[in-house]
Image (tube, rainbow, N blue to C red):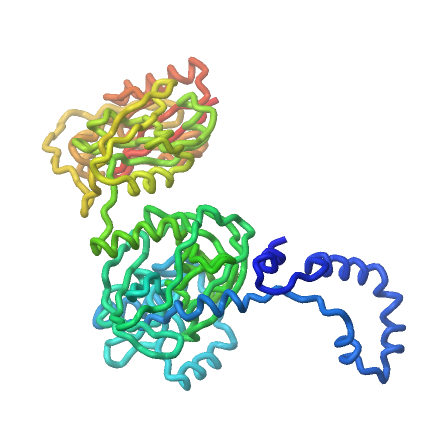
Amino acid sequence: MESNRYLERGAAPAPKRSFRGVLLATAIGTSLVLSSIVPYAVAQDQGQNLTQQTQQQVPQLLPSLSPIIQKVMPAVVNVSVTMKGDAAMSSDDDEASPGSAPGGNGGMPNFPSSPFDEMLKRFFDQQGRGPGNGPGMGPGMPQRPQTGNRVALGSGFIIDPQGYVVTNNHVVGESGTVTVIFQDDSKHPAKIVGRDPKTDLALLKIETTQPLPFVAWGDSDAAKIGDWILAIGNPFGLGGTVTTGIISARGRDIHSGPFDDYMQLDAPINRGNSGGPTFNQQGQVIGINTAIYSPNGGSVGIGFAIPSNLAKTVVAQLREHGKVDRGWLGVQIQQMTPEIASSLGLKNEHGALVSDVTPNSPAARAGLKQGDVIVKFNGKDVDKLHDLPRLVADTPANSSVDVTVWRNGQNEHLQANVGQMPNDKQQASADDQEQDQAVPEKSSALGLHLGQLDGQTRKQLGLKGEVKGVVVTQVAPDSPAAERGIQPGDVIIAINQQPVGTPADAAQKLKQAKQKGDKNLLLLLNRRGVNEYVGLNVG
């Protein structure tokens, strides 16, 4: 049992029976005899000192977390940030709408206010604490500052005796000044060494004349679901708050960035915990508390932490360069579905489907094509869509890697020289100049009404000149296409990996596939300028 793991590591003497065993035995025994014993027990206990009887019993010791907490607490700090101008106003707006990710309410509904809101507001007013920290988890009751400045409070932890402090990027944001507050309430000005919005991490530095206590990174990959953890931070401005729980899940994608790989925790995490550490039982940092899922801004037992193995590589680059350089392949990918996997002859939905390849990119030079399924990158399996961006990003630029793709019913091995991720998204610059004055060609098949992709249609859809295919003008409501979300305005580029040029050509390919008994068709669509594959079940 996890409760005994603390005891095995010297946190407290081990009881003769496990705590869980005692609880189970007590519960079962109580359920069996409660009805017959309770009246008799009440009568027998009249006039007796029950406290004295309890003290005379052999104590069942619970594991204490105090030894771990006392050791790591000096390295956990509060982060106070003063924001000015538009940043302060924007943060206040976000603060008023709590949500699931660091950036806002995530479409959560509005729930009734807690009856404790006014009490909490008076408490924080008396304590002289300002409103909460920025998007996601600032402490306290949101207030609109009179001066246009805004004080935000978050959490952080020291990772080096020279004074380097890790926190969340959304805690510091575009701040005016940053102050790190130690457990003894001493305040130290800090400078921002670097920020990485893609992973929501930031590195601070305070000046010090003597070595500071610090904590070490742990191996987040070794942390398992069900492992006990500690979260320490500054919720609602209450610095040094400790909460406990377990790892509830791993690999959570909360759609806050391209490299989401969060650990889900059930330890209570509230506004102001942002940037604070998640500790394992050895006092090592295995996560950075970053976001909560909540209908009211308070903890409901669903929190998210950035894994330490992702954070420490980012922090190392921020410390060395002040920014993060990532590898770049130059492909647009999408999630596999059962229909797409079946149409490509794959037995499962593993891998990342290439829906587009950037011209003159490392992927293009390596020979990757639309419709390829990347199943391995640099010797590592690509099980899920989000595996590939992380693997590519972690690869140094100018590295030569092996890329395994599924193409035409078999695996093929390609060599790619990974490039450096551009700062801005590359965009094509081709403009469509064609003016088709002919009568538009139309056709239909499988509930899809198709039209010619002429110049006027391109302008209406905002498509570039390199997009070729036929446009969907109407979809029958009871058709397989409607079930898969195909809609008017989608452009069909290819059917079963075969390009289509005219509505008649596309309709013929659809009908032929149906006549051959194909249960699944693979359509390559362009929707609002973005290519994506759709598996169509016509069986």
